[in-house]
Length: 394
Image (cartoon, rainbow, N blue to C red):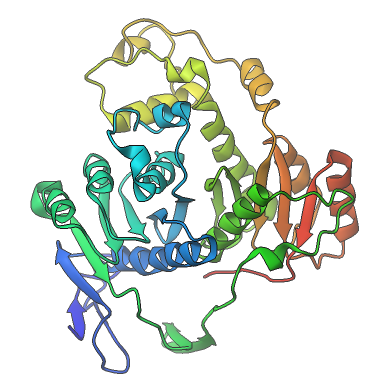
């Protein structure tokens, strides 16, 4: 297949639309089911690069969940603790611990469940039955992978009344070293970002604390590779083999840090006993539970515990999860990693990171206020590496 006609571009009025290889060669994909759209393919090809690179860097199956050309999370296939399984709604999945790919999917899709609603999934490895069964029960637009087990693809084909988008990509495809895009009729050309993110990138530790364990190195690599495929400005919090908060596309870096930190805090608080034991009505669907949990933690527009409201969601009225209780719980958290796609210009980013349990940081360095940022890290006992490499993505 040398080209594939799309229904329309970003919006219904943007026609004609298609994908094709500029040099006239075959597309490196097979569309096994459905009819993916323009934004679907943007998500598919960006997300595939992310999981391919994570797998190469860390040697484990990797999964990411994408929405509007940025990841909501990314993860490698480490087994989930029991509380995290419950928080991700996968504690009922038989054989989960036996499939590293399924564990990576459970982590990535379960990180920011509200933002992953209607996501595009990328799998680094051949999709197995356990992973397919989990994808089937979530609201999702499509999946890209290097292959699918026969039973897995039949499970996925039954999703969305048979219209679920399933794409197979050639894992050996190597894109051209120079890429192009057009804006307002003007063609932009640049070399592809082939920069490799690895352990050596974290060797320039600039803080008094030089102790960076292997687990922190792993998590920083996950954060930085996630940022490589996230709309800038961006920062990423990561821990235990997964991104837990992505702040994407903000003009101010501290706004990225606040956004990502809030997501990371919500992920942590979803594993609190008060949240895990919420008495949901049996008929309440998974997306509705996601919304209620977010409201319960972040005290949004609706007080889900108030009279007249709780009856819609719960079998009995739950106690409020107070800000004091949440702060006390979050104050016990340490060991979180934080990556940034460009330097931190002020130490307010470090102050916000500290509130979310950050102990390890990787950023390019190069600000005229690097000394102020380092001093703030030293005050908190953090370990920070300067990578010397910016990771802007647009």
